[in-house]
Image (cartoon, rainbow, N blue to C red):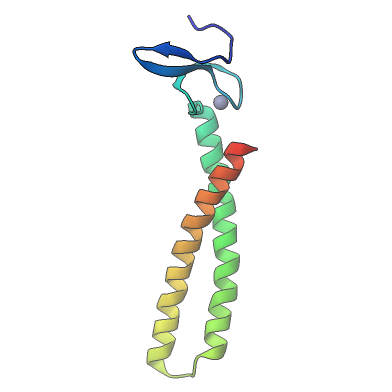
Length: 105
Ligand SMILES: [Zn+2]
């Protein structure tokens, strides 16, 4: 049975939390970890933010690329590849930053 306290305890040589530092549910976690419900909620919220951030910035980047590149096939293909890469990188970065943000707030 877990005690309702936030003070970590040493168990099997590992410091463990007795309650989730975010939602204060009783759990048994390594120090610094969040419970499954909080982890899932943060992942969903960060994914939603990442989807929008990557979509909006990709539209801006893709529009800019199409404006500045000459209407020749090869540069346009390179621009399209760069736009897809931009989307993937921005989504990954926004997911990571969003997860850290929601974890702290
Ligand atoms: Zn929690």
